[in-house]
Image 1 (cartoon, rainbow over the protein chains, first blue to last red):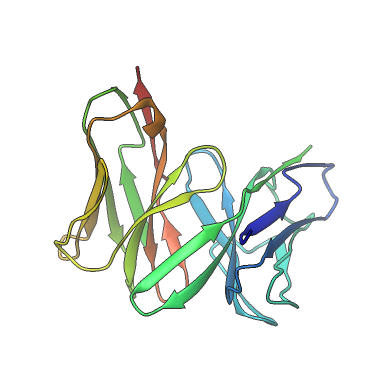
Image 2 (tube, rainbow over the protein chains, first blue to last red):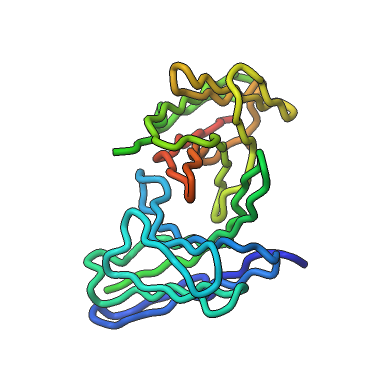
Length: 114
Length: 109
């Protein structure tokens, strides 16, 4: 089945620890994205990558880092510098066609930091 | 600063009612507007709107875009309990999307 997988579904960490969230897609999409969702705030873009070995900061990149060594994978690291890391994290991927643009979302990872 | 504003933030209706959800935007490099439905985890795609005045329909859902007044509406007729969800509006810019905060719709039996 084609799709996007994120793991784990739930993640608990102690404050001060870095944590890496996994995102894999087998849709052959060029672009991948990380969003954060907090209650009442919709989705906010953290980082995105349009091609392998290249990525761009989104609106709230501080305290996060990413890598894009393979087309299929776009892991997100939540560093200890992120002041409020507890949130629901969604990964997405997309293709770009003329007059068409859709993002396909993974199931998400809920991160709780205490 | 680019922004996408959805209203209302939450809405409670009864089965059979018709609802209208609003999305207004101020975005540079606008390319298109998307509507998503989010029930538990991942948002699922509903509509993509690129041109003004052309209504998109899918069953009981329909949506239209006004690029002059910078807004879109999502209509749901004859609502059912299964329509209960968060409805997200997103505007596609050159390289990414800007999401609104969403409208939480609750449909009571």
